Image (cartoon, rainbow, N blue to C red; front, side):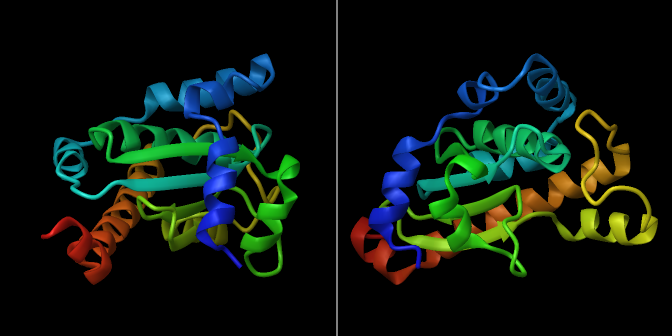
Length: 190
């Protein structure tokens, strides 16, 4: 169960993007930073994210060793940065936080990255992980090699763009859920 007290505690233990990647090895930091430098939001994505009204707390369980995390988590950082402070994004190492990881298992496994979306008061809103539809389609089409790409493996430009858009869509979906919440509308008088 993901009650708000548990989530708030875990969120308080989590690190912002730069602090989180600083805990990795040199190669891990380079892989994450290289992808962060490569990710660029389209103007319409930035405008959408910059127009968010509700505060959103986002907690990501990941692994600095994980290729999928190195490719997707920098996207989350760019999305959060474009929100004008409406998205408070934090990261926890999955393997050091099994009490959380075991509560957000996907298909019976401790997947990474797993993104937990919460309201301003840490009420659970949504969970998504470990990959977007475009990434799953790409992996299914290849059906070869390792399950998780090697850290530092290049992500094709079209897949990067599709994955970024799908994550932006999920952040928008959660924002609209928060914006339309009668509980939050009553609280904020809107």
